[in-house]
Image (cartoon, rainbow over all chains, first blue to last red; front, side, top):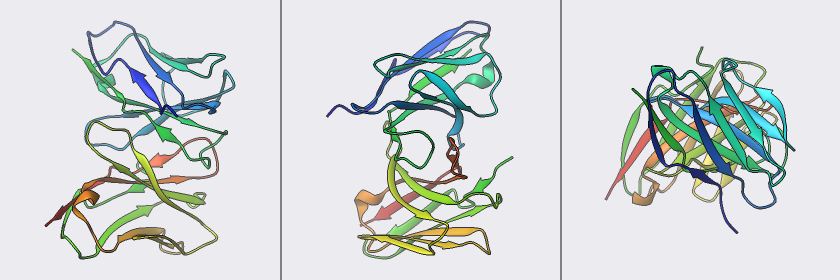
Length: 114
Length: 111
C-alpha cells in the first residue's frame, strides 16, 4: 500500500510568482487536506477536499486555491506569492470527511519565496 | 490566535524514564484531541487520540490524559526509548474539518 506522496520536495520561487504543489492520496482515501507549517509553528489548516469539492477552509486568502481530481490526487495553487508563504506544505489524506478520521500525512513540500 | 498551546519547546528525558508532554487549549468547542509524532523529513504520524467524553486513553507505552475543566491534556510515554526522540504535536478538533495544532515539543530521549 503506497502512502501519501508529495511533489516536489523543495521549491524556490520569487515574490509575485505562482506555484503548484501536488499530492497523491493513500489508496482508498477520498479526502485530502492541506496544511501550512511555517518555521517554528504547528501546521495550520488551509482547506479540505472531499470527492473533488472543497468542503472546509481555514483562514487563508483566496490566492490559495486547490483542486482534487477523480483519482483523489490533489493540487495546491498559490498565486502572487509573498515572503510569508515560505513554509512546509503538508498534504494529508483520510478515508472520510472531517478531522475525526485518521489523517495520513505526506512528507511535505518545502517552499521558499525570495 | 493560537487555540492549542504547547508551552515547552523541548524536553530531554533519560531512557527508561517517563516523558510527559503537555498541551493546553482555549476553545471549549474542541471535543477530540490527538497527538502526532514527527521525525525530520517525514510527515506527522498519528500516535493516539482521546474523545472529550473520556479522561484517559492508553495504547501500549502511550497514555493521553484529558482534564476538560482545566482545558489541559498530557501525553505520557513510559518507558521512554531513544526511538521516541521526535517532535510531538498536540492537535484538537471541534468535529469539523480542521485539526488545530500546537507548535510542537521536541523530545530527546538519551541513552
